[in-house]
Length: 490
Image (tube, rainbow, N blue to C red; front, side, top):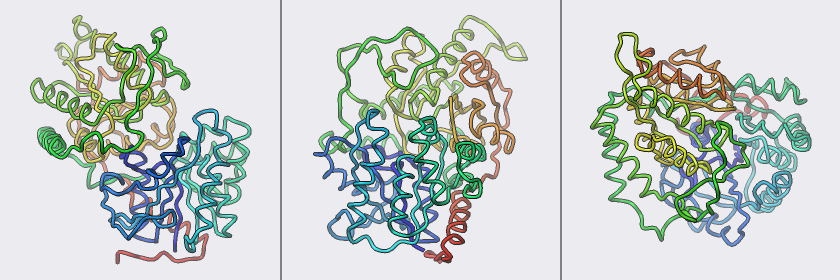
């Protein structure tokens, strides 16, 4: 069986950690069937499209997987990773925010133009994101006369709030089959008007080779070695990928608040303009964090995720600062009378809120113990989980958060807001605590309890792997297409 996968969430040079869950899933699917990925790259600056089509040359461009060159790349001919996934990066016209409703039309124009070329025959289209990817994927499948499969990941159900986009998503789902990574997503789509018979729940998996228990000192030593090697091999700025160098204007910061609207990205900066953090800057931040942790052995709170309002990183900064102030003031103590241990907050991820969060940490007086590391490779995230004492996920909305499953696999206790499938993961695996969402006070109390030793056990639990997820999905698709999977790797 040959599967054409369509998604905007996939590793690329300017965002090497983007959509790693899709990269891992497709890599496992490629062991069972032929998989080709069309990675959609939204970009309104058409003069950059030529560079986008050349994505995928270096190993880091595709999430750490090497690529095999096969002659000159063209739109109908991509690069194949060592896992057997052929990847083609497709620039699509998109104007942020104002083009949200029209984006499916511009995506369709780009894909139809590509598919009309010599792409070959496929047995199914698999779109990993409801809108616009899934809407366009369903239309493409109809035009090719093959089954359409979509994947609901969680945040993409936000589009159901718009009547026009909801109608498009519901029509696309009812024209094919949809995989939901959590049961509550299936219920949400059924309530929107999708037939329950066309919805299938297949939970995410983890890479158990990466996310496993390790001694803290071993993990820290490996992280130190990675930074040293990265410094030696760092490319010069002139070789940076398109889109990684830009400037953003600085405006006034709004009044302090624990709630930020998605449309607000204004912040107070020390100068009139600032550049996006460079890889060298992030490596230096990680080196400082490691040095601080190895020298003082503080407790470590870890956050992994995009720095956008829905992930709740602003709530975490407020709660962490409040916890630190109480500790410094000789406030609440542990059960045996000891004053709570000092702590560091390690933030892995990037996004529009990064500068604002850094400014807020400085305003709250905790900038010296809050480390912003930017986006880091998956291998490093696994090691940071071994070095941390608790993972915090203060999201306002979630699907099936893989970061919690990865924490469970590595034996790291977690504190997560009661959204999406977080409670479901907690009930199934334990290993953490659930708190009230959007409540900085509850989050502060939970963090303090975690760091005071309430959750001392660091034992991993067996969780689903990406191989399990891939097998379930391929079995469903094979039954739908009456095509048996081909075991490509024996």
